[in-house]
Image 1 (cartoon, rainbow, N blue to C red):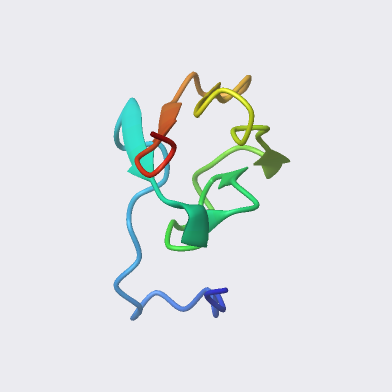
Image 2 (tube, rainbow, N blue to C red):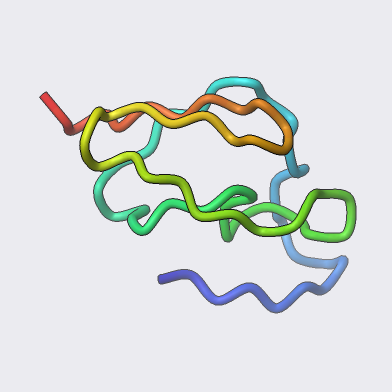
Amino acid sequence: MKIRKGKDSENLDKANAQSRYQVSTKDLPLACPMPEMYLWNSHPKVYLPIQETGEAKCPYCGAEYYLKDSE
């Protein structure tokens, strides 16, 4: 689990910058925005159920997540 410190000097990704993300089982439980994203310009954190189908879509921003090791 990554610890988010929230400092401007950190190299975090812009939240909701992409519409499609590939994630792995190490990212579970999956939440949008992900830990490596800034929070200040994003929506509230929401957990996404990706384990059953290998796919999930964020109800806030519409980002689609795909589990790469679900095959």
